[in-house]
Every structure is written in C-alpha cells, then in structure tokens.
Length: 71
Image 1 (spheres, rainbow, N blue to C red):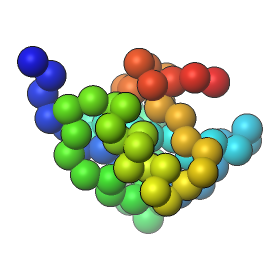
Image 2: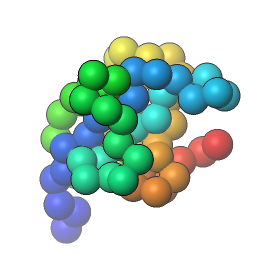
Image 3: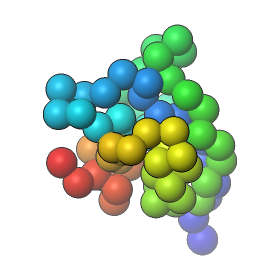
Image 4: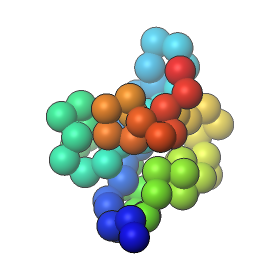
C-alpha cells in the first residue's frame, strides 16, 4: 500500500510552461516562498489533480514524482 505524502506545487513555471509537483523531501523542492502546499496524497496522480485546480499546466517532478512526469 502506498504511503501518504505531502505534495507541493512550484509557483514558478518551468521554461516549458508547466508547474512542477514535488513530494516533501525532494532535493529539487522549490523555496518555501515559491511553492504552494497541495495536501497529503497516496499518489502523485491525485496531487496533480489538486495542482490542476490552481494551474492549467502541471507535471510531476522527474525525480520525486516520476510516475507523473510527462515532459
């Protein structure tokens, strides 16, 4: 069973336009002033759904949410 993790969205888009979603503890987590807490989820897919409430273009971090990384 998947553990529940805290997820955050980067408020600053990537150069390609998407806002990355990160799991707490990721080495590429944005600075505290540049991120929005999404909540606790058991999968990155649920976290991306939450991020889509705020941003049209979202993607999972290659390193901490690779199952949801598309670009």
